[in-house]
Image 1 (cartoon, helix red, strand yellow):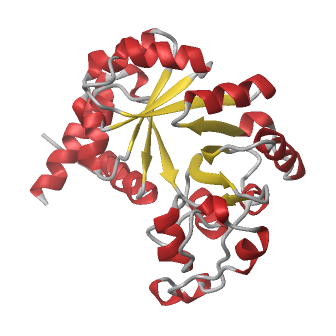
Image 2 (cartoon, one colour):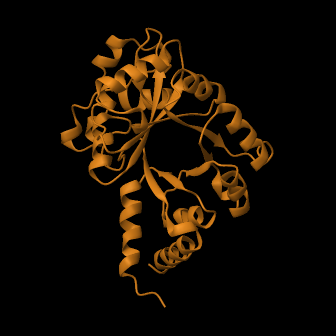
Length: 274
């Protein structure tokens, strides 16, 4: 209990130290504390529980389908399919069922492996959605834009992200109205603020997201922000993580436990800490 109260106090102090005390907590793959990750049900639940933006992962398969799944491990563990996501067919995607439905509440027993259309259909018109590109093939950008239009969403509803500068650059060249973000798994031997800024400028993005953020400080983040980029960090799993993200001045955080994190932080309002 003392550790929790201390983390909350540090979190409050950190928030007062950053500009305006504003930070956005986004949901990683939906509300996975309750529903199977990267499903339409988990995504919808995250929005219903207060998330303003949700991140999910997409692969273009060998037959041109776009499927929502993180990687091979998730595909096998959650859906019982032991293959590279890019080797899936539309028929396999549509027929996939949870390998272990008993791990979840009974109401999620009929969850399906979603395609792009399934995910976009549950995105509220007034919210944002982070579409991380895992496998980018011919026609990917066109298919995303067509699916977005079919769902009745605006281009500003969707943030296109990737670890690949070439992917986001190519998408942006085809559809400049989409906002884009470049993701970095921070490595002190590879990355400096200057190298990140240079790569981000080449990719034409407006935001960057940094993993391993515990290894960076406020000055590191400030240099990137001063160059005109918003800075997000991942994964932020508890109040101690959130306090550190606030301390270094992150604009947004991504969390596997977004609802719980927001709920815990709201307790600060009722904390008489002296």
